[in-house]
Amino acid sequence: LLEASDHVRTKLTRTGDYRITLASRAAIVMALRPMLFVSIHHNADPDGPRPAGPGSETYFQIGSDPSRRAAGLLYEEVTRALAAFPAAWVADTDAGAKYRPAADGGDYYGILRRTAGVPAVLSEAAFVSNPSEEQLLNDPRVQLAEADAIVAAAVRFATTAAPGSGFVEPYPRTTPAGGGGGPQGCVDPPLG
Image (tube, rainbow, N blue to C red; front, side, top):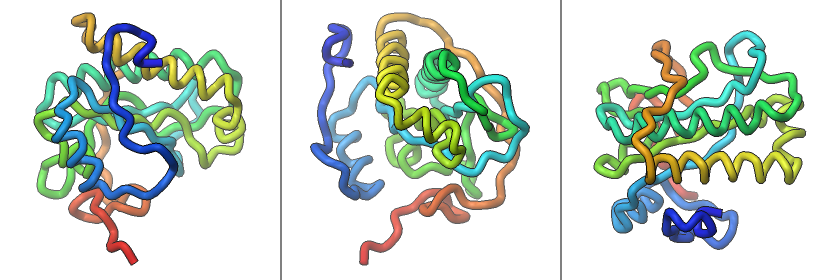
């Protein structure tokens, strides 16, 4: 879809669904030095009240204005696309475009921390742990809508000066995110 947009060139970095470490992903990004890197995920364990629409989150690199702008654009496009589908949406209390600091004040998420110097965004489009949203994410129409939204955000990032929106101040978190977290932020677990 990105290549068909005629506005961006892309590089395929994986040809299948197999484990690749954060360090390896970041090394690829730093070798390619793209205009924008988007790490695509789906969330789990919401902590907020049920919202009227998608509880999407996008994370940007601390101190990077281009990353922040990209996160705002991605948030706009993804929430607009997903809102077209009916669901019993869930969210974190601070859903939106935001950053997450590690204990040392730097970026918590390893993929954002390790790609400093390249505008990078982490997308948590929907909550796969919510049965209603999981059902949506299994629908090819929703998958295409999410993909189209990511493309639209990337094209807007590349071709406009639009600032993005949906920015929120995150609340302090004390628990790790997912399986790769910890007090230092997301780190590669030892490979067994």
